[in-house]
Length: 511
Ligand code: MG
Image (tube, rainbow, N blue to C red):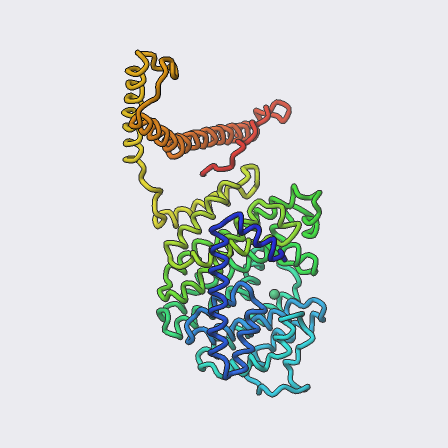
């Protein structure tokens, strides 16, 4: 956990993020204060929201900012599933006991809230810290649950039942073998949350009734968040003896998943990581489509902020070996900036566009997943591009600056010629000083030159360089294809194959 001083020093280097961090903190304090007022007369709700802020850094604020009609059911939904997840995750406990409790968990929801030794939800030996407290005082959450409208209770009960069953199956099976198993596990632990939330949005009237029917898109929303966490948490899960990366992916690169943590195996770990990231990217177009249907601004913030955090985390993990050394996190100040920016669909398109371009630039052309990643990222860029405002049109300023450059330089040269008896390029050859209007012309000429260089010539050089990289990569690929074709035809043996030229240093190659 970075210290507050380190966080502050990083933020000071980025003033915009520092301002965002301060605004974010004020916003969080305001929301917490308002909720404290609202729940003063109801200790069970006070516990629920206090517990929420302790167990979830990322979801607490977005839940607290929902409208009251949705805020309470979503808070209870989150806490119930978090309690269930604590039972699933605690590998210190016996697997059979955990699996049995996961399957029964939904039945606890309708029990009387008076706690006693005979009560089956006495699961207080699970978890640590805030999660342990949540389970110890779970009857308070049940009191909140009993105060919800029947339609919300039915949704929470149904999803808890299905999720608990899926978790129990995974505890029994221990690992995901295929990508289909991995998708199914993520469906149980996160896709179902998407189902439940969509049902709640529809039931509350905040969104159209058809939200309940968007199961594919709701599932993708959960899968994208879950897969991002699973990739980022590789080291933590590996140390705790948990396995979520599917064997079908990691076994392509290594005999054991735990081997990736060894820095000597970085060469095989990186393609495995990029394969996992590419797999997660395939859910992004669905997520964007889901969010484009949301009409209520509070619901939009609630669903979009976690998605933006996920794409930012995924971009941070992209082709980054640090995933195997520690938990890769986005800076708190950047989190604050993203939360404050994610207020509308155009802002969301812009953020997804920017992160997709940033990942596209970092693709290693030699990586086995490079082509698939490039295709998916270009798909995301294509979805977002029509909604991203184009870069400002600089044609008129550029033309004016060229005219100004020609006019001002002619004037200055002429004045020098007049002043120094035709010795234009000999500074002070005839003595004397220039008049104020001449000094003004020189200053303007200087500014015009700065503009031309920064806004016109630099991007031109940069584009020319990109084109050169692109041309080299295409030539390299054609040569590789030709060698492959000749080798298959038996006209080329491994002894006679000339080496391929190295890939261009820049990875910004659009497929
Ligand atoms: Mg879990």
